[in-house]
Image (cartoon, rainbow, N blue to C red; front, top):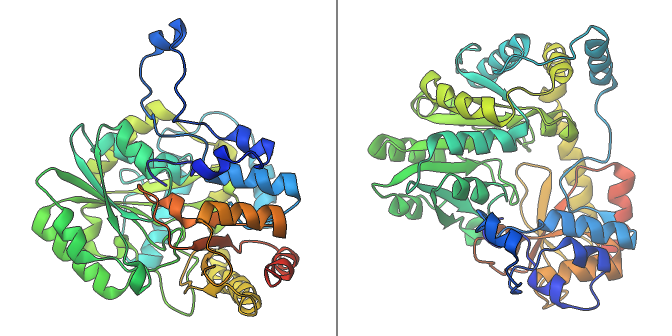
Length: 420
């Protein structure tokens, strides 16, 4: 969600908007007198950034008692075995700083997992860094590898943390839209045309949030050709790597030797093990890139949650939890989509992630922000407008629902949605 991160205009200007949501927004177009303290502070480094739409919609949902299918987190708990391993790690005294790069046992477990899944062997010592979630890994990577004036290509609709990271690094954001007329497929001709001598990095996110698109074999081939011809780096955000459906495997950038040699591959245990609040992620990259990322990482957080790292290292010894994740979430996807088919929403394909998109053109002509507010306040279900995931809001009458919820939560939402 780049640029105007908060999708603010409709929610801010309407006096009927709930007061909590209105207060949660930051109005950027209202001129304020320049106080002495503001003058000393200088210009904002992120002048376009306000409160995210996720926070706003969650506030609306809480105020109206709505079923929250907006923000992307489970409403169920993680495996009791993982909770027990965390408690054991605390009891064992793993409560002080971890090594800067991450607990050795966890880095070794990540290396083994990646090798088993994708066939690429990263050095646990020199090529894997444990981070405070994927968001921190992304920002540390961009700050480490992008210099002022460098261009960074990303695909829209885009997750909201990418743009601020590029701006803070002094880079130039270069958005390229996914082809929404063909299932949000990457348009490799447009991507190639966007590359210039100043292009430093191509930022990818597949399985893709918010569209659920996954990569095909032809996408990997096109990317290999692009990297070979230009030498640009790839940052691949793969946090939904284990949430893929219909028997189609995730195509990781790490699985291509040519790409892995020129890429930073990022993932997270928050999405994989239903522990978004633990904020444990990791970055895998060749040693020379990892060395630069760690320079930033050590002064950004130094190290992350020690007992959680030990718990995850132990839990990863059994691959069954993440190998079973596709079937676990496919059952939720199928339940939700089957229920929504009897509504007036038009479902779009969902190949991965725990989000599904739906068009509402048969229901309303409202803008996406207005429709989402109506959905919460009148119908009791929260969703996210896709327009906010674009640098310049692009209205397609599409909203995103999160189905990482208990079955009873999904059924309660469906009861309300079929009446819209």
